[in-house]
Image (cartoon, rainbow, N blue to C red):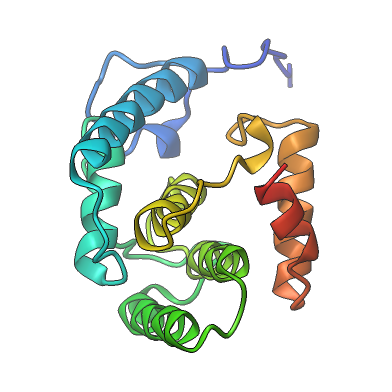
Length: 195
């Protein structure tokens, strides 16, 4: 069997990659990444005009995801309906999200952690729950930034000033910090979020 090697971003999308894709002309990973980023930029503009503070609920989580990916995916803003290799069982998503939002409200009200650590823990748990079929990391980073800016009145995280969608040293460092957080060590995630 011949194995083709494609330059980064030029590999054709496979059947799983295109299921639910709205712009049917997209054929490569680079094109998909560009469409998603353009849609995310629209979501950022939408957020800039609203500055939402009531974000710790299922309604806002779904709305934000739909704003980020609604021009690209049919399932944008809808919780996943199957299990993946990461995340809770799909049918537990609403319950786990409610527990997380309640935990974050408790942490805020009781000043259980620093504001940075609350946002980092929030981000990590969202990634761990894995609400949507795709876009979970970008969604979790953005909503952690919204928490920092609109609820705490602080600067958003920089997340290494890197493109974390594509492979590379920055994404590896980010993933390692999430794995450490899985074991209760948030040091690396906090450092990466502010790097």
